[in-house]
Image 1 (cartoon, rainbow, N blue to C red):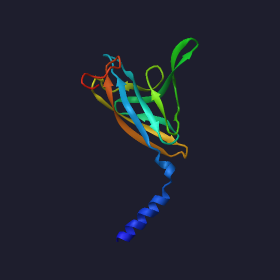
Image 2: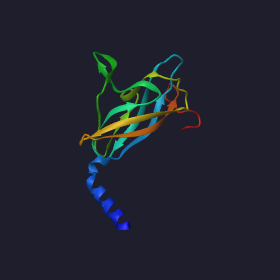
Image 3: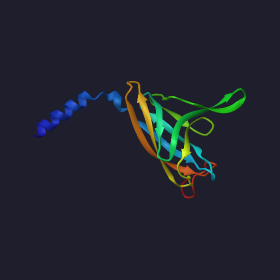
Image 4: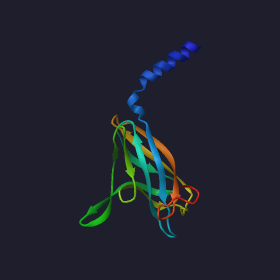
Length: 152
């Protein structure tokens, strides 16, 4: 029996390409709090990966729609532009931060209060076209981006 399990495990290991296992980590995820009546906000974090990959989607039960955006200067004005895929280099990182790349949460389903946690599922597509997802709990900070008291 033990020999069968060992052979089955070895066969499975050979059948799964190593490239499918990029190690993607999310550091310091947070969501900007909102004021009464506000229906959209941003999420921020640092994404690191061992292999080249791209952020191709984000979902959360907290909002009706989520999109990756970048803030850019267009005709002398700051504007947000959607990004279909955000590349993350092998052994590198990409920062999602205010004034740069970020995730927009639109159509918020409930108010977000400092200290709340918002689940975010990020979908990545590797060079081999395989997709993988990572789910994180992003802390809601106040509208200035300061962590909730006691959360620093």
